[in-house]
Structures are given as C-alpha cells and as structure tokens.
Length: 172
View (cartoon, one colour):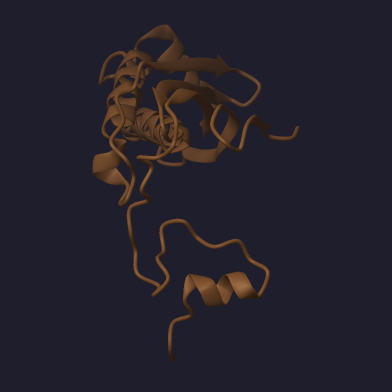
C-alpha cells in the first residue's frame, strides 16, 4: 500500500505535518526565517505509589538516597538533551529549566512540573515534556525495589507561551 504524502493528507482537511515533506519523507523543519522570541513551556506528570513508599521518600529513607533531588537533576539534564533523544527536534540553548516536585498524600505520590524557557525561533514543549518524563522515570527507578506497582500517569503539556501560535493553556 502506498504512503500518502502530506499534501494528500492536507487535501482531506487535515493540517499538514511539519516534519514530513511533500514526498512523505521525514525532515527537520527550517526555522531560520522565524524570529527569536521568548518561549515558555510548562509540563506536568504524576508518579503514583503507596502511602508507605511515599513516606520513605518524604522521610529521606529511600535506600538509593535523595529521590526528589536526584529526579530534579535528571529532569533538568534531560531537558538539555532533548534533541539527542527526540528525532528531528532542534537543539536549543535553554535559558531556564526548573523542576518542581511536590509530594501529595492524597494521590499518594509525587507531582512533577517542569518549566522551560528559551529565546529562540522554536518552542520548548518537547524539552518540558522530556524533563517531566525523565524525572518521573528517575523517581520510579529509585523506589522500584520497594514497590513494583508504582506507575507514571498524566504526562502532558500544561501551558505554552510565545511564538506564532501564541498562548495555550490546557483545560481543567
């Protein structure tokens, strides 16, 4: 079966995919003509676990050490390496990456939120999502020996600002 090109897909009402050229081949988008503007993206995810495992994290008694501190560093490092991990993603000189991890007894678990900022021609949504994903995976890795049933959920873009498409905020 022949592949449909992005032009064929667009003719049926769908927006063309920017990482696919007219012949259907993958390509890196040329952003050289786009103005450098301030761009911010916020992403979030959750790591759900038992109350007992959460208490190990909060008390600082996890066998592998400082779970939240390690996850925070891992998330920041991941944001900086996003273009090495996601094909066709532009390497960016990030100006800010913050990783906030809150423990939540009601969940029970951790809520991980990344905020990434750049002044450049393309957005930082993938960097924020990568930061959250790797921070969540790090939390899992550091507590998996205690509880195998831990799970990661709800990784999503919360907000983005800047660029041609403007401001986006996820619904409630």
